[in-house]
Image (cartoon, rainbow, N blue to C red; front, side):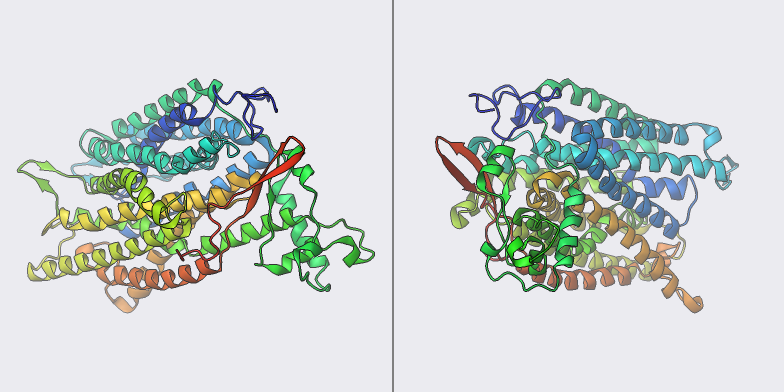
Length: 587
């Protein structure tokens, strides 16, 4: 491995042989991965963006049921990556887990295309009167959706981390390139989403749902071909821990077993392996931090434990568990923002269907296509953030990222609060228009342009550049070395739980507000409901959540680890200090 030209982080090819730095990895490898991501996101958003419309117009579900079903499916899509990441980190590795899962993903897309194309799998209509979907039709449709969710569980957590693996953290030049990786990774994701919300949604509503789902299915297959063309250039990280989850429970068990002992007053009283061990194993040592000190008891040296039969954990092992708990604390305060994001493909779309969607005399804009402005604002904001904002802030803060990751996330949350406040105001205006024009019929168009919704879509796109990319990078960067696929599932599972939470809130709000014959806030007829009250409720809990985020970010302490190399007869230590500021939102 010391031979000149090989990667310094110990990455290998598929045959587990060392790889040359000049011929593998970096952006020339990531180009194939970025191409895959654009096509895959086109496929996903081609389904997700207009799913609520398909459920209400083709399967004839009511508003609450369709919103709940979309949220439940979206939640599953974002929760299954926990299993996919665990399989990758503990057994198969990122590449092979992705390969198997992508085949399941394609199968689900093919079945879904059949479900919306074949007459026998869709409800029938006679003289304008449509029958309800049969049990077998519903079962086939939702089985296809959830097969996609299972496939996404193995692809989503592994493809982005596999991309980040293409940059050698031990090489200063590659490390600088990696700072921009997640920005441009999400940029490609936004491109795929833009094609879906602009083109595929229109095709689905005007040329047929079969064609609208068939195109992204073919696109997904093309994306896999692109991915495998780049195989000779990929770098693969070697798994150095047999079971990362086992280490986690070992630390917790050891800390509990030593609970009656006095806590260490100084890190020197805790067990750690010598530096040469980390040099030889190519693993990274994590330095001690003063949070969650009860876990330090798991690393008490043997002389402090007396006749203990269990060998102590190392500081690095204990700090790995602390990192997971710290990320869990941040994860909790991402759930409400994920709930706000869930409105884009659900209530925002249903709200848009009630407004005037005409462009000119003949063209009518699909309500779901307004989601393209979320993507467009992202596509504009990412280059501006990466090329202008980061260099400007870097000069002021001396932080390679410009601002800390938690500062970035906090700014995104603040913009999101502004977006939901505007959504509330616009809905109040829509309700006044309904009242002044005496509109009662659910199919009657409110005399307001759909472009009244534009500001909330654009602001949510800008917010996502800060919080979504920031969260993905935060959970990857702060994860212990051997659990970075699992680490990124903090990001995906937060979105998943946010969707489930929105499903729960919509269901409960509908039940509570419609008691005793009262008007539901989210009824079947949005022209005779009070969606403004629901948006006001979301605004209040978002403000409260922002307070919780500020508290959690001040408590969080960033990971500090060493990159170890043996140079001549000495050991050189490079501390990872990109995020060494202990208070998350302080400059």
